[in-house]
Image (tube, rainbow, N blue to C red; front, side, top):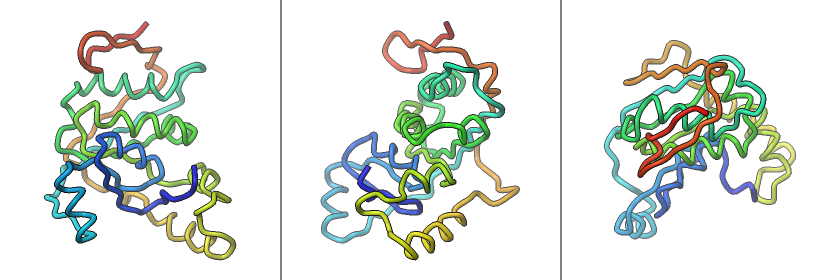
Length: 187
């Protein structure tokens, strides 16, 4: 909410839900205590190449369906370990229709499917949310930043290691039980 997280950034933190920042089009993921120390000392972090996953939610969600319902439906389909080792890009009309808060919910829950990170490509919703925030670029700097941020889209025809597709109109309210969010049903 301060405009510190911006599209295109790489963010690491000692919290598994750091992926929440992916809602802004940032690559953000949690790391361990030793890695935090390394980042603070060197401003670097050695990483292996993550697998890529595209999760597309096609069409419009029904009225009353929330981002939490969408992400729980996704986890219900993939399982709580279905995203293990992946960086997930959430896309599709139902995702683009979400508010920034909804996108943050979605990316926050990426870890609950085992993913390393989740993100949504930045768009007008992102730009409008960031504009005017305390630490966001101002004036011409903001316009220049938006011009760059618009380039942070997946290339047409890009290939992914895994692709998951859901139809938004088939998603109903979701509830979980048990010990993990993969234990989910529609109500």
